Image (cartoon, rainbow, N blue to C red; front, side, top):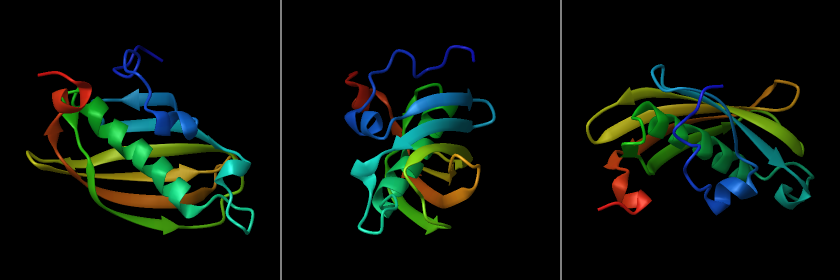
Length: 141
């Protein structure tokens, strides 16, 4: 994979917790593929990955998609999302696939899907995001 905009950015603690790894990114197409891992710390009483962690993985897929598409110029905090949990998610590795659906001046629409190690879809999300200059988040003036 060629160098990406993420190489020189510090990884947020939440992404570290989720085991976030960049697998592929296509800024022009507005797509990304991210790896995650969930261990016993992520489990609910039924022994499956708690839905909030799956939602966080989806959110940590779609946000970087938009960041990459704009060459790091845009940070877009999520203002609304809808998650569908398709099947139980067992501990292990996951792959998030995201894409930018529409990028407007103030609002962006994105979506993400999360797959388990067997390649089966476990959750899907659609997101609305507030488009902001990334300098605010990255500490630039």
